[in-house]
Image (cartoon, rainbow, N blue to C red; front, side, top):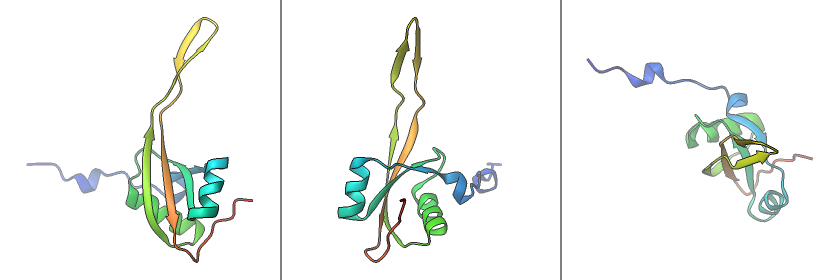
Amino acid sequence: MPQDITKTRLELEPHQIILRPLVTEKGYHKAERCNAYAFEVNQLAGKEDIRKAVEALFDVKVVRVNTQTRKGKARRTRFRKGVTKSWKKAIVTLDEEHRIDFF
């Protein structure tokens, strides 16, 4: 008998999905021009999870969610080699009448 996937799916709270906002020059420019905001999100979260989390945390209407999985980069310090962690980035476009103020 096949196992039911819906019972084993991990349910994340909104504050566990949205880890932090990415406040950069490029992100600030997109927020001003396109009303799109960038967040670092949990790698287990899907687009629908991200949409619900942003709407719940910031009380806004989300139009579109784009995601990117960023691979870790090779780094070297003196005689040691290592890799930075991989992470997931979400670019959330809001409805025209909604805004998020980080400052």
